[in-house]
Structure formats: C-alpha cells, structure tokens
Length: 412
Image (cartoon, rainbow, N blue to C red; front, side):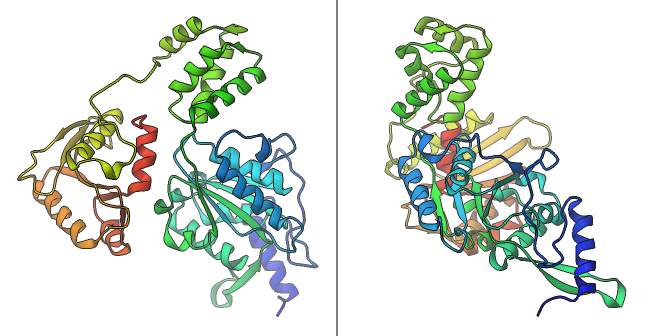
C-alpha cells in the first residue's frame, strides 16, 4: 500500500531535516539521481579512478571481483553486498573504488567513524542512486544505532522512520533505491554477526609479494617523474612490509625531495633518514604457519608484536602462570596500564569456548591491578565466548586479527 500524500509530505520533511540535501520525488517516493558535486563529500567521481585491471597484486581476489561485476552487469538487480577484509595499508579502499569503476556505478564513500548518529547514515542512504555502490570503511567501528539502520537498509532497502508527533506518532517504512555495499574491516571476526550475514561475497586481502611491490614501486615512480634504478626499487619493496600503502608513501616522500633520479646509494641514505632499512635478523622463530610453532615460540611472537606496539612485555614462567602467559605494560595517557595476555596456539578448527574465557577472566580479576585481559589465539572463538567477553575488560584476538596485527607490526 502506497503512502498518502500527507504521509509523504511529513516523511519528506523529516528526511530533509535529517540530511540537509536530499529532495524527494513526489511521484515515486524515491530519490532522484543526483549529480556529483563538491557540496557532498561522500560522492566520488569514478572517471579518473583506476579499474581492477590496473591494480597490482591480489590477483585471485581481483579476478573474483571482476567475475562478480561481469555477472551482474546488465542484470536487472544490483550485485549483492561485499566485504573486503584485511589489515590497514593493503589497498582495500582502492580495490573497492576500482570495483565501482568496473561495474559502471556511481560511488559514495564514508569512513564509519564519522557516522556518529543514525541521521548521518540516513543522509547517505537516501542519496543513493539506483544501482550505485556505497563504500563504508572500517564497518567494525559503527555505533549500534547506526548499525541497526544499516542492517535494515541492506536487508529491506528501506528505513524505519517515526513520523508525526505525540499521539499521532507512527512508524513509516521509507523505501530506498537498491544499491551495493562494499564494506571494509580488519577481519570477518571484527564485524557484528547481524551485519556479516548481509555480506554475500567475502574476500580477504593477503600480503603482497615482493615482485608485486616492485611493479608497484616502478609504476608509482613513473607517475611521479622519478627515475629509480632496479636495485633501489627492490630495496623500497623490501622495506615496505608487504603493504602497497607503504610503497606509495615512500615514493611520495622521495618525490618531495626534488630529485629526478634515485640510485641505490641515494635510496639507502633516504631510507636511513626516514628510519627505515632492511629488517634486522632477530631471535624470533622462523615460521610459515603460526600453528606450527611451539607454545613457547608462539608466546615469543606475541611478545615481540607487543613490543612493536610500544608495550614492555615479559613472558611468565611456564608453570604457575595462572592462565597468564605474558604481562605487558604501556606508559600512555588514557590507555596505559598493566595488561594480562593469554596465548593459545590451537588448530584453526578448534574453537575457544566460554569456559576458557571465564577461567582467564578469573585470573584477570585475581590479579587486582590489570586494566584489561587479552586472549590471543590462532583459531576462533565461539559466539558464547564472545558474548561472555563483550561486557567485560576482556579483548579477544582470533587468528585472522592476529595475522593482521603481525603484518601491521612488520613481524611477518
């Protein structure tokens, strides 16, 4: 049943107040196509963006996205929603934009930390054109009230509004144009289940190979008018930590120095000035799979990661640790204090249940001075374990999140 004219008028008034720039189409109660303009910071012009074919690395992931775009192109419906997971600096935003470019859709984009209230998201959703793409960065940061609006929009392509005042207040389902969400997050496990089930295609970025970073270094150098010899290109790729963003930042720094040519010696000098260089050989175990480590070596890896994050950490004795493997301290305002960490190197198929988290929480409480307990594992946690820890000073780090943190810390 279509809304009455009076209902539509009140609904349009509400949406206009909530968004400041959305105007309704009285004939359809839909949002008319909007031209991209500088007054709308979420609108991104795709004409100058690279497509998926122009990106380096992530070949398997890019091929899946190309096939997905090809399948839906020309269909009568928009592609189902997508998740791009992976650590910071792996190019998730660039990949999401390239997908919108290849699919031929108009694009809107927002950082989820900026969506503080439900009307902030409503302003974007009501401006989405039919078949357009919405990129939301770091969806794990969405506040609960904003998340509820998004999930309903993804499932129903509508928003529940309350119109009228006093005894005349009543709910109204405001229809939205169909669109495709491309969400980014560090890992699937960092996303609330109700949002995760709306994301049909879930892809995870991997670390870039050295050869891929070398290709990227060479391409970015050409774009910035830099002539960099092969040895210097390899050196830049080696210190990039497996992430393309590091390569881009280094090339930008080099271009600002005003040199048109960079040899290997100049490159070493510049990197040294930036505090960068080949990774030193340390006492960390050599491993390809975290699950292959011994329990002690796994604790060493986690302790080294904490050190890169600014913690002072100490591995407890093997016996009598009370469920605490590492004691770490951080000297920073607001977030500083004493942290207790438990490390469990389990097979991926072995989930951590609530009883183990409950036992660890007992050790944190018994300590008396810890600000938080952190449970780190190579596997995953059950829903019951996550529900138990959610309201407590306990943080759960699963295998995917750990891999991402290790990459960010340049441990692997």
